[in-house]
Length: 260
Image 1 (spheres, rainbow, N blue to C red):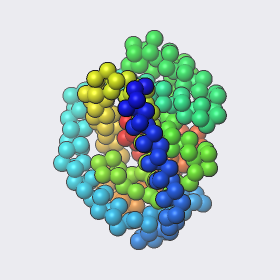
Image 2 (cartoon, one colour; image 1 turned 90 degrees about the vertical axis):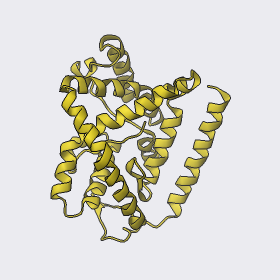
Image 3 (cartoon, helix red, strand yellow; image 1 turned 120 degrees about the vertical axis):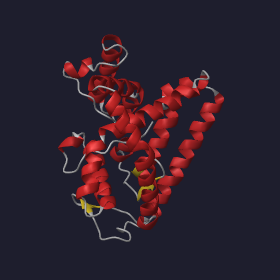
């Protein structure tokens, strides 16, 4: 790793520490709205007014740009093509998943993630085909936010990140660490391939937004409070992931994370 990359990574770790300390001092109240719970845990949204304002801006951008582009992508790209793109992007995240499995002490998960990387890269045409899943090794997403949870770090306040959407202080910190520690990103930046990194981000957002088209339509139409519905769904999904459960089996809809 180049010295510049090391400096950036150390800066991110310092920022992460500050964010986590701030979350420990923050209020754990439900914010401006009525208290909401996921299981026995109360959702902490002390900045709900500001979050709703950012949420409204994100919604406007989504309706004007992301949703139409995602619908166009669904229209022009057959499902096998979209599945191949999703598989390829997941394969690129394998090093980060492996690192977090190791940090969590999950050696079985580490073995599975390592096996998936080699099988799908070698037999799945660089990851376009999920051969490992066909062979009984399913995809298990892991990130540093989940790692912090296994270390006993609480969610901290809920927040809406501009353009990126729902998160918490813990998960936002985890996203920063994963992004800057990602070996694929480091390789691209060290070889003047930054454009590939940003292309990867754009394609990831497009792929995941296309997957959400029907779900978002349903939530917008049927939710009494769309903001609260998204907040609850986010917490339920993250809780399921931390407990190594399939998010689709939790009580709420699956909301993917735009974390790379």
